Image (tube, rainbow, N blue to C red; front, side, top):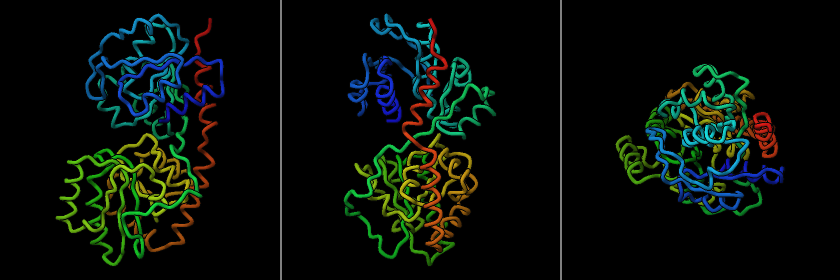
Length: 354
């Protein structure tokens, strides 16, 4: 979604830019949107490449390979290998739009080797940039930080949707995103159990909005039942409009083990919700920390997380102050047009000259 918006914004700002799109895998819900945004559109379903395994095959689109390109942009680690192949074929500089963080780097076969083939790297947070510099010896001048921007419109006048849970008398602690290991889904029943044991008088409900696969849901329900916190956790499943749920949250919690940025954090902050997360693994949390606009605890410190949530539970005023601080800080740093201009400057800096 971020890449699609960048492409559309570039097209709106620079009518002279010719943008062709090669989709690595077909069948995406956004496939037709990408097709509409490109002068030429290609799908490469035969390319076998994933984060875990990489079996290189030649890009066989004859029409694509007969084109001329000044710049190749590889969006995410999945596109890095074919991006390198296209760089060699077209003798064009390669810009790597890196949207993952350290865990993904570790499971991508040959990441450090392929990273060295990139002429410029665009990443979405200072957190990821520091990882590239410190752990992969990438020159700071090679990396440009272009922050994400929220993926939905924050319309304060939109109608409130009836929610499938009762908010009266309870503090709603909200989470959002796909319910999976990387997002910390296994940590939620543990956190709920620790919180209940430490602060039995607190009336809290953890609400997670996002797609929850069948097996994952059963695992979480099993843990929740045996730790007697089933009534303290509500999984909404995939929903079309998360904004009414966000509005119901008193606190926004992110348990992710890795987020290069974390759009959900920015979205919650932009509607004035106080944010709590782990240190050193979520780009948007690190951004908020720069402005003292969130609470964070050491990685996987569940006991400390429970304490941080209790601090906000006990003080509505503190919640309001932290939420307003997060909103002000994020709004001053995230801007659709500014991000597009930054991206355009990167492209101009590497453009192959005649």
